[in-house]
Length: 275
Image (cartoon, rainbow, N blue to C red):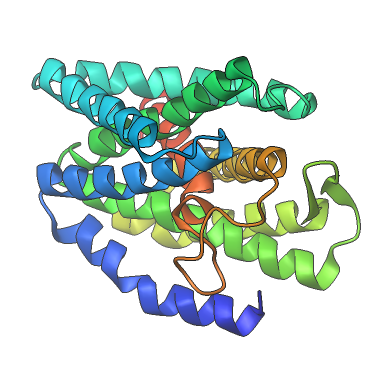
């Protein structure tokens, strides 16, 4: 993938999600994002080795019904969305352990397939719930949601360019040989700078800057875990990209992987820090 192709695709596509996050009512945004995430989950079924259309459709239907049930049961307090977001945080902590043993779940057996399908649901559903919770939170909810998405983009872009320029030490060569520690530091620094720039737009005073930077850096760090986990699933299944939907960027899941990990951590961390 060329750098020019990657940047051009990002610039063309970026205005659409930005406008949706800022101006769509939360129910409409949730429906749109659900469709996008379920399309990404369709790509995930290929990682699990599902080839026949019927079981793939049934799996997506089950996840869509789970999303609907969580919304229906949440009530005005969004209790179920918040609970699912907490589950998402716990899940990504477990993923860190999985990455330390990259051979876990590898193979074509029924057990490995079931583990990977469950992993797909645990990646997608809590992230979708976290986005709904965040976007529905008061007048600044859309801005906070946009900030969460932008910080993941900033971390990804900062990591890409820092890694391309200064990358030497491999981050996880057994999972994703192209990623470096220098790229990680570049991504964290870029996201922290974004936090400083965005502070006034989020309805916060400067006294909240340390907490916001902490939240931003933690979210950017876990976004790397999301990226690595999808890379591991692709390595297990022997594919390079989850799809070819976006020139220079691969498929939907290649664009969603970091965000799926970031959203639950961001919204739970925001509530915990009182931001």
